[in-house]
Image 1 (cartoon, rainbow, N blue to C red):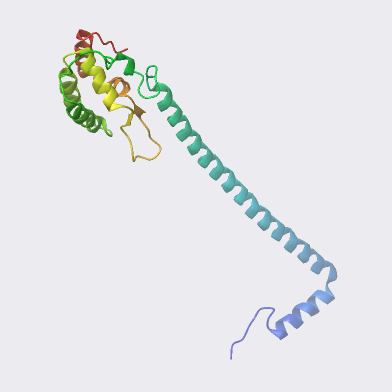
Image 2 (tube, rainbow, N blue to C red; image 1 turned 180 degrees about the horizontal axis):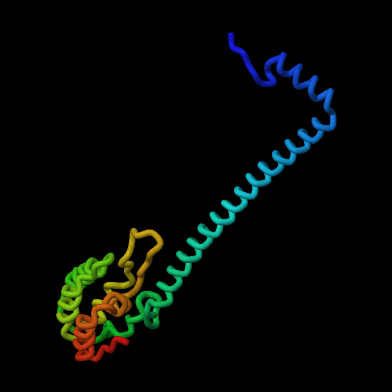
Length: 198
């Protein structure tokens, strides 16, 4: 048989009631202290919850603000393209009525464009491939044909919260910015064709 020494035991409850009845002032003080203690415990609990909520809100809000600022900076630092809706460089191509012969077939230009996209993709730019393909362009028109077929591509696709969508010229400038030697080689070759990257 289980014995309880708490208020659930009828004998203990009767003794507590008897003591309380004989000492009403002391009992009132104990009850007041109990309520004060309870209020303090509950108050501290809610203060703790409020503090945790504030800190959590600040951390989450700060994280969202940081991500937003990062995306904004990425958008602002990207060089702006030219004049049209596609890439902005279509006006640089020979018109259809001209008898201009490109150095490569359209299929080969598309291969170059895909290879450049892969070279720019992700964190590690393959500068050697970029320089090699750009140096293969013998004329200004060939370079702008490559720019046209490259179109607008995202070198960070499938990477959440990161986008680097732009034209070939945008990517040449932004992706080679930290690689001064390769950027100079690209700029020098393009300058020899009459194309000047800023």
